[in-house]
Length: 186
Image 1 (cartoon, one colour):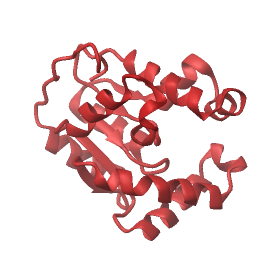
Image 2 (cartoon, one colour; image 1 turned 135 degrees about the vertical axis):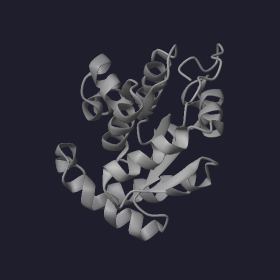
Image 3 (cartoon, rainbow, N blue to C red; image 1 turned 120 degrees about the vertical axis):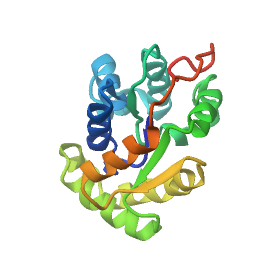
Image 4 (tube, one colour; image 1 turned 90 degrees about the vertical axis):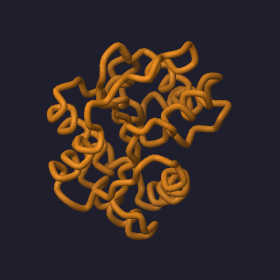
C-alpha cells in the first residue's frame, strides 16, 4: 500500500496504523532516507533538491518488495520532474496505477487543504526554519498532481485510526505486484 500526500497529511501516522491493522511492515521513505543520508533539509542545503530527488528514488528502490507492506512516500515523490531519475517515470506510473495506492489530503478543497496542512506543519519540529508562504506555495504546486492521480483520495480531517481502518478495509487481502527491473520496490 502506497500512501501519498503533502507533508502533514497524515501519511506516517495513518500508514503505521494501517500496517499494524494488516500485520505487515511499515516503511516511511523520509525516515529511510534519513537513515542513509542524514537530515533531509541539510542534505538539500548541501547537495540541492535534484540530488535529494535522485537519492530518494534510490532509497525507494532499496525497499524489500518480497512481502506486503505499507509505504508512506515523501511528499514530493510523485511531483519530482521526470528527469530526476531515469527510473522515476516508470516507478511513478506503477505507483499511480496500483489499486492499493491512496492519496491522503486534509481536504479536496485547495485553500482548505493549504490552511490545514500549514497548521499541522507548524506543530512539527522541522517547521521551525520554513516559512508559511514557502510551504503554502509548495502545497499549491503539488495539490493538482495529487488530485489528478487516479488513486483513491481520502480526506484526513478526522481521527487517524478511522482513516487507517478505511484504508485497511479497502486493501482486503492484498497481493504483491510482480516486481520488474524498473520498479523493484513495488
